[in-house]
Each structure stands twice: as structure tokens, then as C-alpha cells.
Length: 260
Image (cartoon, rainbow, N blue to C red; front, top):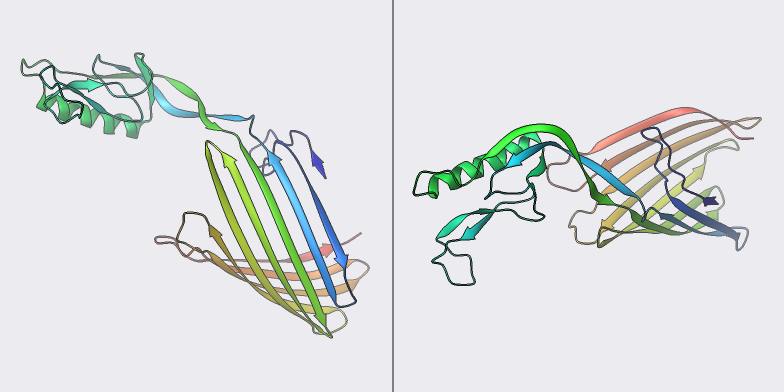
């Protein structure tokens, strides 16, 4: 398949966006063994997502930017290291009198400015002040686009009324100067309970570079062919994020499927 700038305008429709395409191959090596291979690429590297941080605030001459507060050296501090005494606050990043702050950021930065003013300004003059919020402003380079590559291989072995499937996949995401790779391993075991009814149970685990958590999931499926392309089905999945502060979850779905 091939996609050309496939993003939708409505919220939730851009699961696959940007230019991209994929290919899948399935080969019956023998009556009992089938091998599969799939590759997909999604290029959103030329897309930039703007982010609204909040309101534009006026800033004093010795101030902080949205992303951080920086103390400046006092005139009598001739060393390279910023060890104090401090001479005030300085902007971090681009110069200018307006910056975008959310209400939470404004409260945090205002508190730091107040604390530093209490330590500085021997003449009683405030070093800096945070002005009132104005119109909302947008940081147009808040998030640059990414390029995603997905690769998967699988093998299915049938033995009478039983069958097993092993699948391995990777997802590589490059963007914002970083590269992240996820690996997935899944194993299923199935049985044909009758000519028209089958069941399977599976287990999968994923791993992400640089993270200790190894999320895993257990799946269960029941399928009954009614004839004429109609199929009754149930699919359930129980997920364990394997990360502190995150609870396990379970999802269930049942329905009728029509193949034509």
C-alpha cells in the first residue's frame, strides 16, 4: 500500500499520517508451516505541530524564560563558574519582552522570581517582575515531525487441530534529534474445537530502549463461523504496564464479523 499525506482533518483520524507505505508477504512453506513478513514506513518529518503554552506575559529586564530560570554573576564574581554572589536573573534562550506561559508555569516562575528578589536588590529595588497575561501565543516549533519504521516477521505451525504462532516486530521512531526503538514478541496457541469453532490464547511482551519496564499482555479469542461469511467472535486482552504508578487494565469486545 502507499499513502500520500494521509492525515485527516478531524481529531482522532491521523493514526497514520504523512507520506508512507507498506508491504506484506505470506508464504506457505508446506501444508503445516506458513511464514509472514511485513514492513511499513510513515514519514512525518516535514510536519511541525504548534503548541499553545498559555498567555503572553511581559517580563522585566532581569528575568526568566518559560523553560528555565538563570542567575547571573555579580560584578565582583570574576570566576567562570556561577557560584555567587549573584547579580540578578537573566533570560534563558531568545531575547524579547514576551514569553508564552501556562497558568501553572506563570505561578512557578513568579515564585522563583519573588524568592530571588528577596535575596537580591540591596537597594530594595526588585530585580524582576512578571507582568500581566495577555493574548494567547503559540510556539510554532514545539514539536517537529517524526519518521516511523515498522518491521514484523511471523511463523504459524499447524499440527492437526492445534496451531501455534510466533511473531516478532520492531518499531523505530526518529525525530526531535532522538531515536527510539521498541521490540515486540508475541506467542499464540490455538485449537479448532469443531469445524466452525476455534479458540486461541496468546502472550506478548514489549521492550523500549532506555526503559526498565517491559509491558506484557495476555489475549484470548473465541471464533464461530456461521456460514455465508458471518462470524461470531469474542476477543479479550489483559495488559500489565510493568511500571510504577500504572495499573493493569482489561478490555473485552464481542461482535459479528462479515467477510466478503
